[in-house]
Every structure is written in structure tokens, then in C-alpha cells.
Image 1 (cartoon, rainbow, N blue to C red):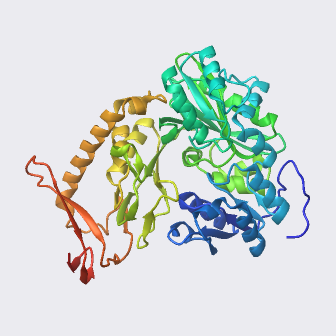
Image 2 (spheres, rainbow, N blue to C red; image 1 turned 120 degrees about the vertical axis):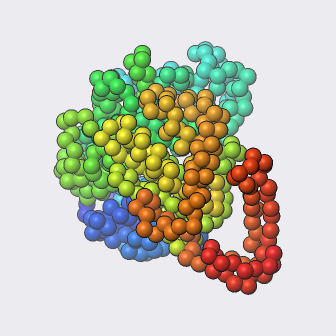
Image 3 (cartoon, helix red, strand yellow; image 1 turned 90 degrees about the vertical axis):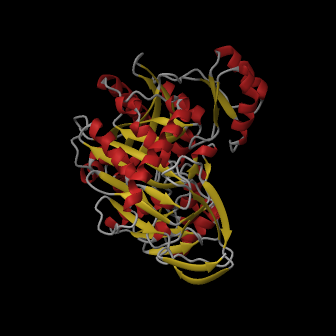
Length: 547
């Protein structure tokens, strides 16, 4: 790639000819799609059993193992070997690594699309980000000034400010390394777990703002010169253990003046650091008391960027790439979005994350092969997924549990909620357990429709929501049952697929079948069997075998 300077505060912005997507799953496919539309040559990474996201890429590069996505030296070698000039990290993996951005530039001459290592170092440290907020006169919650790995320090500060408190890994992300502690008896075990999830094994303590508070985040885009635009706000209050489940845009805050104060705070911070690329500035906000507090900066593309795209009628990833190629923020925004930025967006959008999790077993990862799926289509419905009809998809323990994101958009909040219910009715995943039951219960709940869910709502109502969701799914399956013999190939309400056009069945394959009679209330019976010989396989139409 030629010689490059060995130090710089921000990434060089220049034309991009070859782009490596250093990620997988639905977000890798999403980035590939936008890059192709910009006529950029794309390179996708795959492992042996995880390839669905790469079908649209110009080049597919096999990596040895799942851990290769975190192997900076290996990724640098890939970039050198293929003369790649830019890398998109997506979210997760190395997307917030200042070391990755710096080494990719210094050792391979490739730009990692994002804010650059200087900003990553400042925002990746949550305490440094809080100091930035205070510099910009943005409210923050009381917290320790330095990270610690000592329980006595944690106990002393918690006693000083009073419970409840949050324990946060100083270098955590994606909801990891965070624990809510309501009383002292919970402190020791929570602190040990938070420290164990921190790469540095250090945490800080922060006064908790929970009951009545919403999780509000502001989408920022800048060009590194001090010019910054906001793309309005999102809300992520429906969450479990700090993992987002449902996201929406704009927020349910009725007082747009109050929402505007939060947006202005994010813009001030972004201008102060001359923010480059995409960033999400996160806050806790109480619409009743009109208090809000800065939480953190996510200096990358977010999982929930989709709802911002939907209400703005545009492509946020294209805008990010345009800025990386040298466009001003004003030019990038005008090219990639159709919405008038001077008025609040009229559209409402909701994102529903479908995950391979067994909700009845404490949301544990559900491992297995996806044998079939149906995903919704129709007016106002978008689905981002790496599931491919006719291709085997294995859910293993190497990657996260996200299978698909359903994004619904409508002119009113009521219509968006109604559309969400219809979309989930037309969704099914066969082969692994998912969180569909709970999603159906969430969008059916009057609190959700009223827009009054705070950050504790899902966990406060976990048991009744699960029970309600199971009943909703049971009723839905009973409604579907008489139609199972009919073909769905001409349906306009969903897109369907199986993991293989002809599912591969072999000697040794085993199943657990639960059989019940819908006409009686007796408990279902579970039967286990293992194939000892496959005679004729045209499954699911026909299977002859010995078991």
C-alpha cells in the first residue's frame, strides 16, 4: 500500500476502492449491500459453518476460526495480501478498538472506518467520556473518579452515595460488565462478576437512575472538522440486563422540548471533540422530572441504526462511507437522506431483535441447526438477517445469538405497534428456541402501546410477559394448524425458507418430539429417537428410516 505516516489524530479520508468487512451476520450483509451500491469492491470473512452473510460480497475469505475476527495481526495480513484500502468493523468485535484502528493504518495503510484511534481511546473509557460530558456542561451521575479492582473501594463509595448503584466495567461494552446493586448484600458478588467481564478487571461505581428513567440515545454524524449533524434520537428502554431487546425512533418522550435538550447535549459533546463518522451518545432521561444524565458514547455503528434510517428515509452506512471517502457531513447527509432535518420526523419505527435464546431457561443461548424459518414482508416491514433459504445455518456458541431484526415503520405510533404485532404473527424459526414469545407479549402489552416503559419495565414484568407470550404463541399455532397442509409459496405476508433444499439426514441424527392432542388438556408427551439407517430422504415431504 506504500508508505504511510506513523501517527495521526484522525483517519485519512480518501477514495475507497476495496473494503474489508471485519464482521459477520446481518450487519456484515448490511454493510456489503451499501458498499456494493457505491460500486466499492467488497471482501467478506467467513468461517466454515458461518457463511450466509457473505453471499453478496465480491470476494469471500475463509478465516481459521471464530477468534480470527479478533486477531488484529491476522486481519492486517489479510488487508496486505489483498491490497485493501479500508476496513468496516461493523459493531462488536474490534469496532471500538483504538489499537485495531492504529495498527491497521500503521502496518497496512488501511483506514478503519470510524472516528479514529484518538477518539476511540477517549470515548472507549467510560470515565474519560464522563469527563468529556462535564467539560461540555452535560449532566452526569455521581461516580468514582478512577477505576478500581478492589472491593473495599467499591464498598466505600457505594456507602457514601447510597444505594442503588451501578457497577460498570470501565472498558466494557454491549451491556457486559454492568451490574445493578440495590443493597449492600448484593455488592460483593456483583462486583466480582463485573470485574470478570472487564478486559482490565477494573470497574467504577455510579449512582443508579432506574425507576422512571428511559434509555435515550442520540445518533451523531460528523466529518472531523467540528461540523456535526444529529439524526434525531432513539429509545432503547425495553431491555434486559442492559441488553436491548426492542428499539424505536423517535423516542416516546412526548415533550419534544425536553427531547431537544438531550439532543443538544449530544451535539455539544460531538462538536467539542470534532467528532468524525458515526457515534451514539447515550443518556438516561426521566420525562416526569425532566432530569437527564449522560451515560456513554458508542463510537461506532449501532445494532439499532435501522430505525434511524427508517424515520429519516435514508442509508446511514452510505453516509458513513461517504464521509470516510472525504465528503463533508452536509454533503453526505443530503446525498443519503430524504428527510427535512429542520422538522421532527413524522414516521415512527420499531426494531424487534429475534435471538436464539431459551427465554424459559434464563434467556440461555439455544444451540442447534435452523431447519426452517418464515419472516414477514409487506408494507412498512424490513428484515435484516443473514439467514438464507436453502442454506444450512448453525447456531453455535462462537457468536452472538442475533438471528434477525424486524423493523416496522408507520405514520403513527399506533400503526407501528399494530404492524409489529402482525409482523411477529408471520414470523417463525424452526430448529432452535427464540425470544419470539416474549416479543409478541411486549408489543401486545398496554404499557408498550402507551409508550410508558422505563428501563426496568421488562425485568419487573418478566414472568407475566413470558406467560402471556406463551399463550399468544399457542393461540397463533392453533390458528395456523388447519393451514399447514396448504402451500405458502404464493403468500405475500412472509418469506419462508429451510436450512437446506433437501435436508441432510444421516445415521446417528437424533430428535426429541413433543406430541399433544389439541382437543384435550392433557400434558404433551416427549419421545426421543435416533436414526440407525436412512432408507429414503425427501424430508420434509417423505422420510423412510429405521430408528
